Length: 153
Image (cartoon, rainbow, N blue to C red; front, side, top):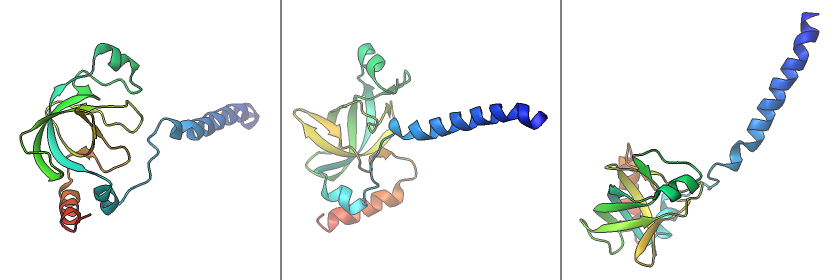
């Protein structure tokens, strides 16, 4: 009798689990894992930069798919620490625009990032589906990128 009464509850939990698994990928970034060589060859600019200013307006923050916390932003001003590829110079300040997509990075003030960039007029934009990320344990990745750039990719 206990089994019969708990069966509808089990079925309900199972259905909720199935529905959540089925829709989980709808809001995630759906990029293929790109190789270092592919990311380097597809990028004009690769840099290590630090976020010096958050630029999202209140309206943009509300409209963004993932609402950034007060110390986060999709659009930022960066101070370049090192240019790994392209004509950008160290200590140059650039502004990063965003498309506010699922794949767009959310930046934190004063944090450093490894960025694969494209020019968008006078602004820059992080290339989607690359190896752009916050710098934390990326020493090997940066070394691999430097080798790929040296090979002329």
